[in-house]
Image (spheres, rainbow, N blue to C red):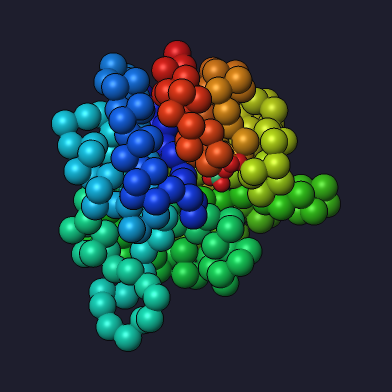
Length: 240
Ligand code: PGA
């Protein structure tokens, strides 16, 4: 049985003060959570978040990690720093990093290998754009992202399938599309990394989460907007 993982991606939202307010409401709500609950927060929130989540069911994650151990990489952050600040997970290759910050399959691969070297759990994101889907390139794009992004990766990873057209747009993939695509991804990932958890991400919210999580291939969610709202995120955490 693959475990259910509900991970929030706060993106560039929430100050330390806002993190404290969020946790005051959210931590009691998820004390009976049956799934793995992860919150991937901005670097500056990591330390406070790990203090506030101590003794709760909530695990802490970052949103990027350098592929280098240390050195002249202005603006980057290394695995050791993340671990010291309390991170156990790290999102790698989110489509926003691919679109705005020059992330490639090669850098996704280097970051994933680096995370595993330091025993951080990578949540590796893959997904096609609207044009790619409309032109019939979904499988080709996902295959490339998986084969190149997961080259030489043997280990404890999590995959997030996030169709770019569904992120932050309010357009969720139907449960059937998400399930079929994740089934395709699973077949590609299996020979490389084994039967790892594969999450769905893209406008998952309190109203549609159950229908997505009911699908056999969907092992959890990577949730942006709805993870900023304690009540909504708690509803997703409590889906059956
Ligand atoms: P969204 O973001 O839930 O706001 O669509 C998901 C993500 O980008 O991880």
